[in-house]
Length: 168
Image 1 (cartoon, rainbow, N blue to C red):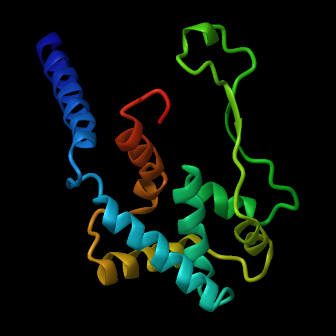
Image 2 (tube, rainbow, N blue to C red):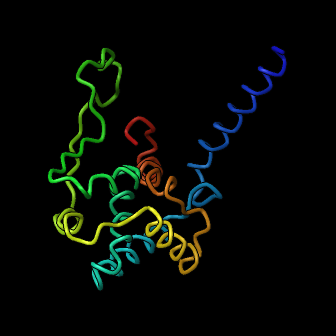
């Protein structure tokens, strides 16, 4: 039984190692290339600006990409009156001096029109965002887009440009 446990752990670690190495390539099956990401942001922004009420699902794709916060959390926040978004915070973090940048709190500034758009009707559902992502996959030929993937693409971009995993 311990042998199967070790094999399982080795398999998990190998998979994590491969995924981490994917950061070193300009594109992979895990992450779209940076030109595709640029097109994605432009595409979503343009569709949203042209018809904010009709294409509000694209706003959630933008917000998730720009913040690294999952789409589900943005969907939840659309029904709230106040948007205090902190990416990470732990004032009791006891190993702060071990961090390279020693940051344990970061309030993310966002473009005013995007936050105001979040407050405007209609209320968007998860299915609408999934449909918008499907259209992006088809129109922009980016097969690896998903609601879970979109929120980690910011991390991927920061890591690519800085080569600093802790900063990303």
